[in-house]
Each structure stands twice: as C-alpha cells, then as structure tokens.
Image 1 (spheres, one colour):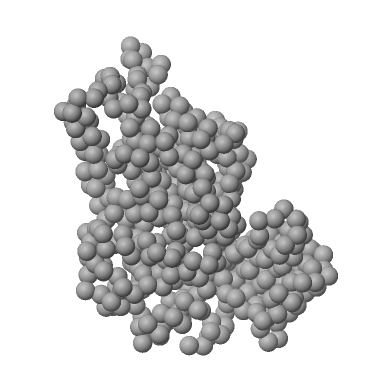
Image 2: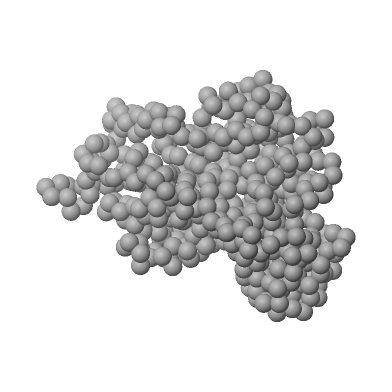
Length: 483
C-alpha cells in the first residue's frame, strides 16, 4: 500500500504552547480553505494545561471528500522552537516549514502554497462550513425547538454550553450553568416537568454523578436529552483525550429497569440530525435519550453543509395532550416513587408489576419507530463477505482508510445502540467475516453484538491509548487481516 497515493490531499500542522493561539490559527486557516471550496478535516490535540505544554492542530484538505486528517505534513507552522523537533519525523520531503511568522503572514504563505500547487483561490465558491460535532449537535437541538440547556463545563462537552450560551437571546432559549452536575440534571427535571424542552451535557465522569436523577427521569417519565461526551477514563483519566470505553455505561445508565434511547453519531452532520431527533424522540416517548459523543467527534472539525440539513428536514413534534403545571383544571403530579396512573405511591406486587409493564410498553412503540430510522448504516461493497463494524467517531478514520484498502469491503456503522436493532445488524453481519473496530480495551461493541444477535466477533482492532485511529495505519492492519 502506497500511503502517498492520494496526491490531492494536503496536510498542515500548527504547533505551539497553550496560549500561543494554535487552535485559533488552525481554525482560521480551515475556514479560509473551506470558503474557497476545499473539504476539510481538522484535529486538535492538547494537554490538560492552561499554559505551556504542546498544542497541535493538524488540518488535511482536498477538493474531494475527506473524512480524516493524515500524519504526514506538507506544511508545518512552528509557533515555538520545540514544534519542529517534536514533528520532524512527520514532515514530507520538500515540505514547507514556517517559523517566526505573524498570523497574517502564515495565511499569505498558505495562499502561496496553493498557488504553487496549481489551485486558484477564487476558483470555487463554497457553501460548506467548518464545524465540530458539539456545535453541530447544539444546532440540531436549536432546530428542534430547545427551550433550556443546562450544563457544567467539563471537557470535552464544554463547547456545547459555550455555543448555546452565545445563542440564548434567540427565540427565548435559556442557558444555565449551575454549581455541579447533580444540580444540572435535577434542575433539568424541574424544567421538563414544567413542559419545556430541555437538554443537559457533560463528559462521562459528570454523567456518573447524574445517575440517581437519571433514574428519576425514567421513573417519572420526564422527557430529557443527555449529551455524554466520552474521554479517556476511569476517574479523571486523560481529560483532553478520547475513548469509546463508556458504551456499556451509557446503555445501562441509571439504576432500575426503564426504557431509554442511546444513539451515537459518527460525524458532525449526524450529530446535527441526532441532536434534533433526540429532542423529538424524548418528547414523543417520554423516555430519557442519551446522545453518545466522544472527544474526537466533539472537538474535531469537518466541512459540512448544515444549512442544507435544515431545509425542510427537521421535524418539530408538538407536546400533544400532555398536561403540565398550570394546565386549567388539572393536577399534575411527579414522584420518584413507584406510582400508579394518578401519581399515587404503590407498593403492592400487582401494582408494581403493572406499572413496570406500562413503562416498557414504550419499548414496543420505540421498536416500531426504529423501522423508520437509520439505526444502521452501510457503506462500501454491500455484497462483500468481508465486513467492518463500528460506532461513533471511528467512522471517520474507517471511511478515510477505505481509500487505501486493497479490496472493496462492507462497512457497517451502528447508530442506535439502545434499543439495539438486532434484526438489521444480524442481516448485515450474518455469515460474514467480521472485524470490529473500536476505541476501547474490552471490545464493548463486539460483546454487545454477541449479546443481542448471537454473532461472535473474534477479530477486533482495538485502540485504547487515548489517541485517534490513523487511517493509513488502520488500512495497513485491515489489509493484512483481509489478505
């Protein structure tokens, strides 16, 4: 496999210490390239430091669709001396190394590079926007009529809070930052009880603090969307790096048994669609909905056309006949205790059994709804007997790696993780030679597939060092396994 076979893909690296403006410069370059018609993928890597350390933005761009960034650099922008030493092995032969330049001078050098490579700066007028998964998800919530967002800042979910806070004067949206994550979800339950559309967000560690109140949402049947962005865990872990290790935690979150929905977008466009869909689903079925993100999806940026998604494609389900406090001649009760239809606490066996079954009737209705949703997506050669299966942000390196496969294979993305669409997954994987690709140590998706379908996936590619998959390395490993 020749890793330089995609001659139309170029990569820029920008490195420096925290506080040097690495991210801002990278995003400004990305926006410029996006405006003149380039497809972009921009990754951001930084340590858990306010000042110092080494921050690095890697931006790959092409006139063709690009799903992931590449390690090998055509341009390296050094904002400090150590950047060149750290990334010297990533520099291509003949690459441009820019040192000691001001921001505007860096952009002029990028324009000069494009000219040398034969690109006309004004040759294409683009409708694409550079956006990360968190912002796209937040825009989806907005499009579906979000009333309140409650959040406590915790990397990598914080930019959802920041974006929506900047929009809170529009259409009556309110954004609140309480003192901790426990206050976040309890405040959200009160807002939901009052009949307003509400979402909360945190990293997985913050969501761990919300578990009792999350169960309250299930018991009281209060609509609630929870954005959970994974980072390398357990405990504080590696707070600025990524992981897919909390899949099982998300689908089994809360104590007791109650239906919930867990969806995992794989790119910003899906984050937008699922953000809007989650808000409508929670109000339709009165079950909590988790949108499972991770640091890579939350903070890395891609070129997408979000406005195109808005054009007639965002449903806005109304609240129907629901009653809320203040409804004339209605008493509206809510309780964390097991209760009957009138909100009266019950503890007799027959009543408890009946109410559990009542809540799980929703699971049947959700299963019907799943038939109309893209719970599973398929790419590549749909007839191939060799198949990759994955979820979440792993989509990007897999679709980029596919450009370097020695053969065309089938790629299966699982979007709905709870309820799990066993029928569709089994149809796509049964009788195939399957490799599961995921960012954790235990192969949690593979074990979930086995549990739900009986299909044993023995071949896995697992990454648990907190860093993203590299498409070239991934393609090389997949080519070896499918040789």
